[in-house]
Length: 146
Image 1 (cartoon, one colour):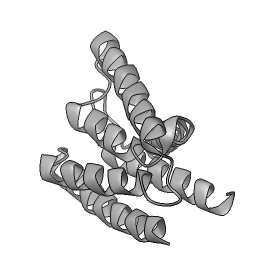
Image 2: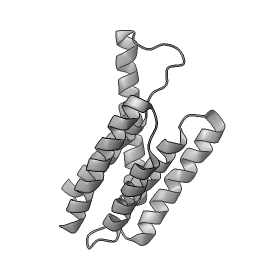
Image 3: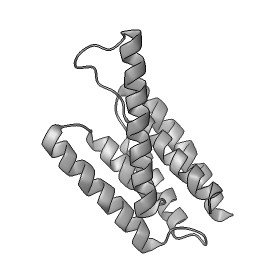
Protein backbone atom coordinates (compact mmCIF):
# COMPACT_ATOMS: atom_id res chain seq x y z
CA UNK A 1 0.00 0.00 0.00
CA UNK A 2 2.79 2.42 0.87
CA UNK A 3 4.43 1.81 -2.50
CA UNK A 4 1.17 2.78 -4.25
CA UNK A 5 1.12 6.07 -2.34
CA UNK A 6 4.75 6.74 -3.26
CA UNK A 7 4.08 5.93 -6.92
CA UNK A 8 1.15 8.39 -6.84
CA UNK A 9 3.55 11.03 -5.50
CA UNK A 10 6.06 10.12 -8.23
CA UNK A 11 3.37 10.48 -10.91
CA UNK A 12 2.42 13.90 -9.53
CA UNK A 13 6.05 14.99 -9.74
CA UNK A 14 6.29 13.60 -13.29
CA UNK A 15 3.26 15.67 -14.34
CA UNK A 16 4.97 18.80 -12.99
CA UNK A 17 8.22 17.89 -14.78
CA UNK A 18 6.38 17.22 -18.06
CA UNK A 19 4.52 20.53 -18.04
CA UNK A 20 7.71 22.41 -17.12
CA UNK A 21 9.64 20.65 -19.88
CA UNK A 22 6.98 21.47 -22.48
CA UNK A 23 7.06 25.19 -21.71
CA UNK A 24 10.75 25.77 -20.88
CA UNK A 25 12.51 22.79 -22.53
CA UNK A 26 14.37 22.25 -19.29
CA UNK A 27 13.91 19.79 -16.42
CA UNK A 28 14.30 21.44 -12.99
CA UNK A 29 16.82 19.88 -10.62
CA UNK A 30 14.62 20.32 -7.55
CA UNK A 31 11.85 18.25 -9.14
CA UNK A 32 14.29 15.50 -10.13
CA UNK A 33 15.63 15.45 -6.56
CA UNK A 34 12.10 15.06 -5.19
CA UNK A 35 11.44 12.29 -7.72
CA UNK A 36 14.66 10.49 -6.77
CA UNK A 37 13.71 10.65 -3.09
CA UNK A 38 10.18 9.36 -3.66
CA UNK A 39 11.37 6.63 -6.04
CA UNK A 40 14.13 5.63 -3.64
CA UNK A 41 11.60 5.29 -0.83
CA UNK A 42 9.37 3.30 -3.17
CA UNK A 43 12.23 0.91 -3.91
CA UNK A 44 12.79 0.09 -0.24
CA UNK A 45 9.07 -0.10 0.61
CA UNK A 46 7.57 -3.45 1.57
CA UNK A 47 6.69 -4.41 -1.99
CA UNK A 48 9.42 -2.40 -3.77
CA UNK A 49 12.17 -3.67 -6.05
CA UNK A 50 14.92 -3.54 -3.43
CA UNK A 51 18.10 -1.53 -3.06
CA UNK A 52 20.28 -3.58 -5.42
CA UNK A 53 17.72 -3.57 -8.25
CA UNK A 54 17.09 0.14 -7.71
CA UNK A 55 20.73 1.13 -8.07
CA UNK A 56 21.36 -1.38 -10.87
CA UNK A 57 18.42 0.01 -12.86
CA UNK A 58 19.41 3.63 -12.31
CA UNK A 59 23.06 2.94 -13.09
CA UNK A 60 22.44 0.90 -16.22
CA UNK A 61 20.06 3.42 -17.78
CA UNK A 62 22.29 6.36 -16.82
CA UNK A 63 25.44 4.83 -18.31
CA UNK A 64 23.61 3.89 -21.52
CA UNK A 65 22.10 7.36 -21.96
CA UNK A 66 25.41 9.12 -21.18
CA UNK A 67 27.29 7.01 -23.74
CA UNK A 68 24.53 7.57 -26.31
CA UNK A 69 24.61 11.29 -25.56
CA UNK A 70 28.38 11.47 -25.99
CA UNK A 71 28.21 9.62 -29.30
CA UNK A 72 25.23 11.28 -30.96
CA UNK A 73 24.12 14.16 -28.67
CA UNK A 74 20.58 12.88 -28.34
CA UNK A 75 19.46 13.72 -24.81
CA UNK A 76 19.99 16.56 -22.41
CA UNK A 77 21.37 16.19 -18.92
CA UNK A 78 17.92 16.65 -17.42
CA UNK A 79 16.56 13.71 -19.41
CA UNK A 80 19.36 11.49 -18.13
CA UNK A 81 18.76 12.58 -14.53
CA UNK A 82 15.01 12.10 -14.94
CA UNK A 83 15.33 8.52 -16.21
CA UNK A 84 17.89 7.65 -13.54
CA UNK A 85 15.69 9.01 -10.77
CA UNK A 86 12.63 7.17 -12.05
CA UNK A 87 14.60 3.96 -12.52
CA UNK A 88 15.19 3.81 -8.77
CA UNK A 89 11.67 2.48 -8.28
CA UNK A 90 11.57 0.37 -11.45
CA UNK A 91 14.68 -1.78 -11.23
CA UNK A 92 16.66 -2.96 -14.25
CA UNK A 93 13.85 -4.53 -16.26
CA UNK A 94 11.35 -1.77 -15.53
CA UNK A 95 13.78 1.02 -16.35
CA UNK A 96 14.46 -0.45 -19.80
CA UNK A 97 10.72 -0.85 -20.38
CA UNK A 98 10.21 2.79 -19.40
CA UNK A 99 13.03 3.96 -21.68
CA UNK A 100 11.70 1.91 -24.60
CA UNK A 101 8.13 3.12 -24.09
CA UNK A 102 9.33 6.73 -23.86
CA UNK A 103 11.35 6.53 -27.06
CA UNK A 104 8.44 4.78 -28.80
CA UNK A 105 6.03 7.52 -27.66
CA UNK A 106 8.44 10.18 -28.93
CA UNK A 107 8.67 8.37 -32.27
CA UNK A 108 4.89 8.28 -32.61
CA UNK A 109 4.75 12.01 -31.82
CA UNK A 110 7.42 12.72 -34.44
CA UNK A 111 5.45 10.77 -37.04
CA UNK A 112 2.38 12.81 -36.14
CA UNK A 113 4.37 16.02 -36.60
CA UNK A 114 5.69 14.84 -39.96
CA UNK A 115 2.21 14.00 -41.20
CA UNK A 116 0.91 17.38 -40.05
CA UNK A 117 3.99 19.07 -41.57
CA UNK A 118 4.63 20.94 -38.34
CA UNK A 119 8.23 19.85 -37.92
CA UNK A 120 11.18 21.84 -39.15
CA UNK A 121 14.72 20.56 -39.48
CA UNK A 122 16.54 21.07 -36.21
CA UNK A 123 13.38 21.15 -34.08
CA UNK A 124 14.08 20.19 -30.47
CA UNK A 125 11.72 17.74 -28.85
CA UNK A 126 11.19 17.92 -25.06
CA UNK A 127 11.80 14.29 -24.11
CA UNK A 128 10.82 14.71 -20.45
CA UNK A 129 7.15 14.21 -21.20
CA UNK A 130 7.80 11.03 -23.18
CA UNK A 131 10.07 9.54 -20.53
CA UNK A 132 7.40 10.40 -17.95
CA UNK A 133 4.83 8.53 -20.04
CA UNK A 134 7.21 5.59 -20.29
CA UNK A 135 7.76 5.49 -16.53
CA UNK A 136 4.03 5.70 -15.88
CA UNK A 137 3.39 2.80 -18.26
CA UNK A 138 6.15 0.74 -16.64
CA UNK A 139 4.70 1.38 -13.17
CA UNK A 140 1.23 0.53 -14.44
CA UNK A 141 2.47 -2.70 -16.03
CA UNK A 142 4.33 -3.69 -12.85
CA UNK A 143 1.29 -2.91 -10.70
CA UNK A 144 -1.25 -4.79 -12.85
CA UNK A 145 0.85 -7.88 -13.64
CA UNK A 146 2.33 -8.58 -10.20
